[in-house]
Length: 237
Image (cartoon, rainbow, N blue to C red; front, side, top):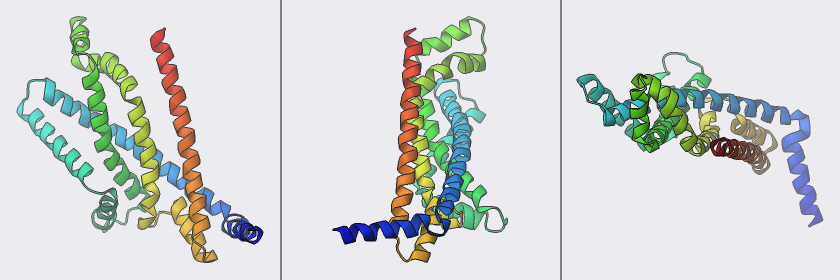
């Protein structure tokens, strides 16, 4: 037993501390977090637009342009949600960006942002639908335009309803970016694979990577819970 523990300790020392290899994990982890942050910002931006198009398509008189936009939004969401993100990543980088000499990081942000936007759109749409229809009528009766009512009354209430789902989507997105090493982005998973190629031992680097992701997920879950409690307290006031 003691020999086994000593062997494990030595393996983790080689994988993390020897030759300052922890710096490779930290650089890769920073890349993963930056990619996830920009991807979620892109996903939320596109998702809000898609959600508003679908909401207007369901609740407003449909002109030709609105019907076309609603049809495009439905097709977009169906295709993105119905295909694996790994396949989307390969298509975007090797086919769409293949002749553009674009940065793999940009391709990764675009891929995960687009993928996330389809899920965010449905989350936001459901949150808007959950707000009582009378809120829109009340805003319009006060002289507010449709856009002003949506921005000032409907969306703030919808955000409170969808915050847990949006938080879970962000956490899921962070974990999904672990495949970005496929297109030569040096994220934390790719850094672990590089270390394993040097030490000829794959398990310790992968366990270290898993632990780093786990810590981030736990921290984000705690912060999300704190934010939800504050919102609940403000509602009670």
